[in-house]
Amino acid sequence: MNEALIKQHIKQYKDGILKQVQQKTLLKYTGAPVIDEERLFFTLLPLLNGEEWEDSQSKSAIAVTLIFSALAAHDLVKESSATTKAQQLQVLAGDYYSGKYYQLLASDKQLDLIQQLSEGIAAISENKTRFYDRQLYSFDELIQSIQLIESKSIEQFLEYYSYHDYVFFMKESLLLITLKKELAAYEQGEQPFYISKSSQLQANLNLLQTEIKKVESLLINEIKNSELLQDQLKSIILSKLKICTLEKQLREG
Amino acid sequence: MDKMKLKLLYSDLKSDLDIIEKELAIAVNSSSHLLNEASLHLLLAGGKRIRPVFVLLAAKFGNYSIDSIKNVAVTVELIHMASLVHDDVIDDAETRRGRETVKAQWNNRVAMYTGDFLFANAIEYITDLQNTYAHEVLSQTMVELCIGEIIQIEDKHYLEQTVRDYLRRIKRKTAILISASCELGAIASGADEKTVRHLKLFGYYVGMSFQIIDDILDLTSTDEQLGKPAGSDLVQGNITLPVLYVKNDPIIQPLLREVLEGSISHENRQLLLAKIRESNGIDRAKRISNNYLEKALNEVKQLPANSAKKSLQNIALFMSKRKF
Image (tube, rainbow over all chains, first blue to last red; front, side, top):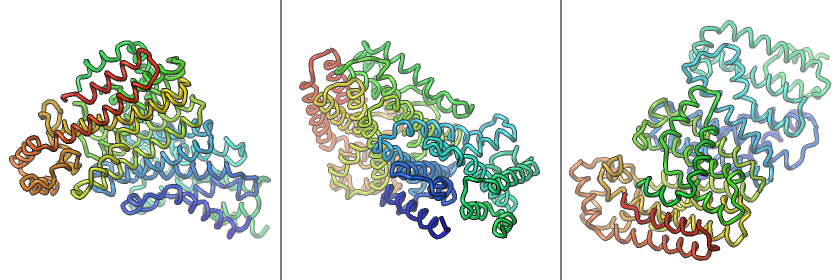
């Protein structure tokens, strides 16, 4: 599948998701739901790689994206004094999108998937609170938490539809993208969520850089040698990961 | 509401409610130290557990088995708890039921994650029930609950809203979860379609009557009885049924504008409450609540005879006739 077609798919899904959750008051005060295109791309990875994809998978992919929109809405609630109308509605936007994901899957009779995704959301919430906990977590535990928060629902979706071979690419890519963004933002003096909330991560920025290099090199190797991913898709994933050197190598054959 | 008196009305459910209480403790248990503390904090704050009671009583009209319905009861209570945690963020509430709220003890974000955790657990619990219609009912309920809250925020401080707007709002905000509790209890126990429908409507009418009384009590009770200042709804900009009936009164209207603009003095607030209490707004609202109560009792009458029938009647009467 070429880049233009991939973009078209992503747009179609985005439109489908927005249609599911149209609510005029929320739109007015909180804007459209957060739909992370990179995450959507990795959710749709099997489709974009030419795998069979049925209506049920489409609905489930929309539901998984809605889960992230719901959780992202709550990430936008200020830690203190969320008293403006926009902030109050941000709380409800998250609950509304959450109800919509459940409603969409219930109407499609996907009870097992609902059960698994709910378990995943509970785990995501648990891992998010680790960044507010007074308990000490090791560097590795925090990295595992970040990975779980970023990819758990998509992992459950891919596993549910037996796209097991895509899980690795999705999980490692989302981890890498997140860690790179976090580090870049922190180095520019911003307050990205994970690093700003964890003194452990702040104290171990060198470890974080090593982790990024480790994940990056592992991914490069796996993508390069993958017999599963089509070449065009490999190239697009790499550009998303901004691993320009390998992209160049691949283009050169 | 006098919790002890209410409990007497469903004392035969005590052992099953104990099972649900234990299950709730398991449900809120988390691997996260902080989340565990926050959820336990909520659980210990108690509550009337009226929604689980409705689930159990409704299930008595089918093949009652605590094992097959306990998860439904846990689910509705978890949803109620989760929405309270999120509501406290919306209302910037420092205390609830005399205890610090999650947002006050930790912060808004922790309250968000606690609520998300509870909502997720609620859904996970009910997936044991392999009945897709039940999930359609519950998911629709969750969406409607949110819409009710969204409308409540939209309608805040808006004096031109109508009685119809108010009724539609409280239907979504309160009545629908009580209605779903009754409906889901009946579905989970395999009650017949007609019975499910009567129980669903019963829950809806009781919920409406209950919320109107709640709104009346906010205006007529003392600060001590309420555990918060009387008239808090108005201070927060929520215009309730008794107020809608008297909003055009020449003495009340300017005071109402002051309270809704946030510029009212303590004396004028007391004067406003006194004027509303003296007005016919309270009685008119009570009449509407009674109409809903009558409708609820009429639905119960049409249910098959059993011990739960009497309990439903008594609870409906208690909830709608309570003094605080």
